[in-house]
Image (spheres, helix red, strand yellow):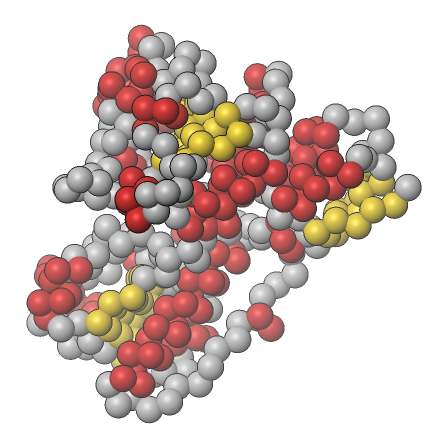
Length: 390
């Protein structure tokens, strides 16, 4: 059996090599010739999967090691009888930690504390649910908006209409890209949305670029009539709007979910889905997969922190930004503005392809000296393991 795997999928060869002959291909340039003889195709979000890629191939199973599926023409796969699987929730914790890091940076720059601030979370699924939990652990008030979940749980009063989020200090978007229907999300954050937000508020988008109307955001930025922006995703990737990038408080190259842990979770989930497919279709009983032995130790496996005499949020910031330096991602992307137009897409893709290994907070044990119990609870609440000493 022949298997084509995006070269940017960690342990792709080790995992899928248990099922057949693996060929790794660069995801952005993957074409019909590359997949024609493949039985299984394993991709990430940079590969458009549909008729143009698969027509005439012998592909029987497509797996995307991502939570999003808008790069896949699922109707075409159903028409062809091709099985499909995604990896919902695989990088949810990674995105939630990205949001925490962004909030802590903005609070430092603005000279305010996060405790008592309000954050509106649009989309409270795998990612949004973790965002709410971590923000509430920081002492913030979380407002939830999710029309499909609200309809499924009509008695749950936590779900609010979108309008009720407009007075929040922060609004963060965690929805799939839906192009039509009652829950359409394309350009959900349009000109009217941006202008309804509270003065001085912040909008964070780490879902899909087109959930925010990028042109409307640029216009609001020119007149200073819209919110401050934290953007990880862009319309027209890998060619982000440079003016919008320069207007943003933090700008990153679609890497919010790029923790190493999240990527490996995606590999494992799609491997298991491929095994289920093979079992159902007479492909035998593939071996189980355990990648834990191959995972490297976090470079910040232990982190001593002296908390006595320090503000709690300074300690939280020190911990979070030591493990994940979001401002380094911001600096790397901003360099794109100095490149010739024709080189920008390749640079954006290279930032993603060569992204430094980033481990999640759960891999770090903080040895905390001093500090109130509330600080320990906050550190635990955003994902760290904590040991204390006097």
